[in-house]
Length: 341
Image 1: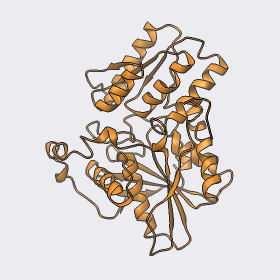
Image 2: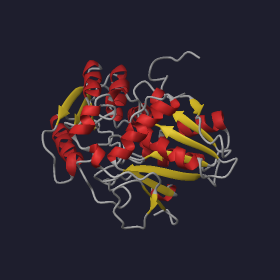
Image 3: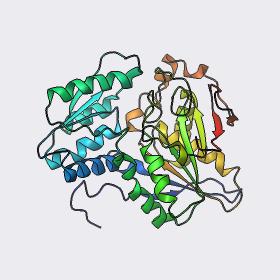
Image 4: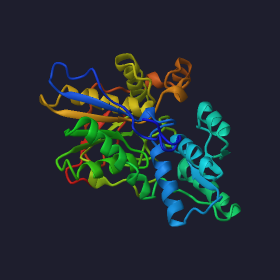
């Protein structure tokens, strides 16, 4: 069907069956959020900006300022200009060159902080953002990590899953701001109250009680600060991967399923593989694959990058190790959140 414009075209992403579970009778599907124009957070950008315009928080012609290293930045650069809003993005040196080129060509002003703060790169970016807000009177800050319109945006994703897939048993997704997985799960549970939700995080992220490691290499998931949009009550189980494991899983996703995704998609895929071999026959599992792999061409997919950072020296678990609350993880580990806390 034709759409009015590119903003109207956000969403409607394909749901595809994966070649997994052939010997166990488990059905596995991937929701290809990577097929949005710039990524999964196109949905968030549209929801946040349109809601702010409706409520008057974002007035005609006012600038938009946000901290982002990837898909939220691109989503705002997609949605803001057609509606008459200049977009300012605060990021850090970890931003990949492809995303940086896209942002600049889309007309966004990019502000790169030059040093890490006490709270890691996230804190440094937020400090710079506060300066920009003071310099740009009337500017709107979407606050992707705390804005309730972030998880609200994923009601459309939940509706698409129910329409395309019908009832299913397990939802798997990565967690960064908490919006996508928690928002999708909350909306789905109105129809599927027994849905099991599995979150994917990285070692060195504070989201589920781990110590912060700001030198971790994965992007698109994990955090050095605790976002208010992360609702632990929506999560039943958590899996962590170190950088090597996440990157290897991302390469495996391309090799086995012909899907050129980023490291968040790869980590979700590794959990899907695990579940496909262990759940009972008839179980239906859906994984959300958020990002494409193009911006990771010289990191996740770059052999020189691996060698320079000694990734082959990191430990690898072929299966997840079950850990208790308070245990520090260094390789693939899992924990059930029986009380969802």
